Image (cartoon, rainbow, N blue to C red):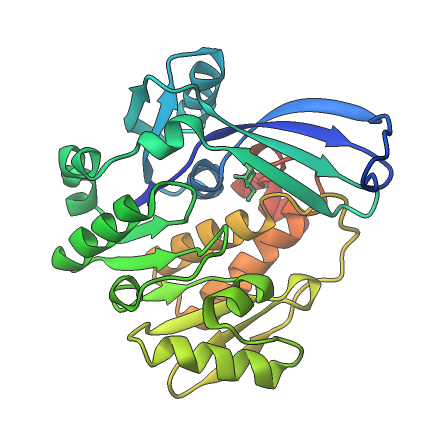
Length: 300
Ligand code: RIB
């Protein structure tokens, strides 16, 4: 089983042909409200692929919160670890342009009410899991605490360091697998990334702090796995990307699922690349994540 600790947001998505300039007003071609949040997306990625997954997070006592947990529950994701808070449910204002690129502004709301006490109350979920996945849209103190608890319980910790920020060495030393994209890797390591050599150099800075493997997603080019002794490129898929929202989330969720099902790092990364390549061909966050049947239709 896998437990995801993280955010739940309602994504308020504005599709426009291009991103407006400073001071410019443009009209959207479409507006949608789509369940999202990096934590919930990663849980959903696993759930839709028929993995066993529980979610720990926080929502408000409002309609968006109701819709988010209903949607998770409809896909078989355990929701008993999601608490109701006084703040409103997190929202994300997302602008997607005609190239499928996005810009996101978060209103964290209830996500910032996820406390260390809540992790203690739901520790039974961590105890039952082999893998614990986290991201950075909930308070860093909670992320730090949850990772420490997961390590005490001897669980494998996967951290998707998004949205990117500098992280304390005391936190990183307890992470088994880190899944940054190139921008996140730059911010984490203060290293300009232009080439594969840069990626290797930056990843080794992280490995030196105790992380066992860094898997860097590099968009359509796939991903690279960097460990102390290996540097392995896993090629991506050239597809017609229309919306990259949740691509990284689908990757991290599928990676954890693959590993939990016994794949080695290479095979799990290959599987995660395949899943992410489907996600980018469809609009939105959780609605774009493939089910297992859909996966088998794309990859026969
Ligand atoms: O990673 C994509 C997610 O980031 C969106 O669903 C949005 O909610 C933000 O958290």
